[in-house]
Length: 183
Image (cartoon, rainbow, N blue to C red; front, top):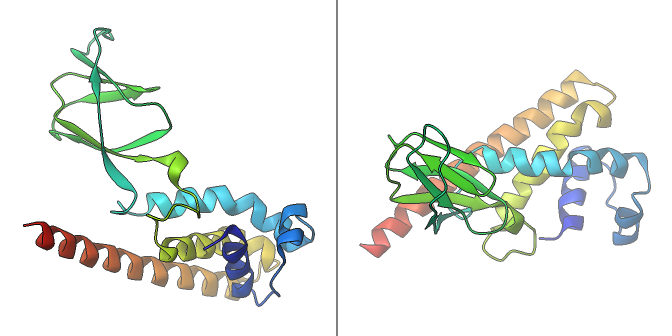
């Protein structure tokens, strides 16, 4: 799925005609301008709604000798923007500052998301996720796109929430299947 596809799907929620690549790049038209304001927030919203299996990975840590007052251990994360979703063991108290994790106990592993890899051209991210991003964009832009039409805002909200629940179910089902296949 391309960025153009994402925008056109968001536009279709409002029964707006599709746009071309040229129109999208030049951000011509009110609808494109409005949706452009919400692309990144929609991506973050869709990313943070659930622990999507295709976004998470085990992050390699390097122990470093620098300590922060009150913490016993320090680990360096690899370069890039990483959102930590889980630290194991779970009971270890920790704090992430920049590309370091300071902890009060030993950390066995870290699960996180490399945020810079969340792009439509990443083959590991299913098209269904980008559909969710398009619906999130429509949801976030719904007040402006519908001139604050409460009925339309409710329709867009329902569409987003229904698709989100379908996506969660799909990921949970797929995740269970993947676990069973590896055993």
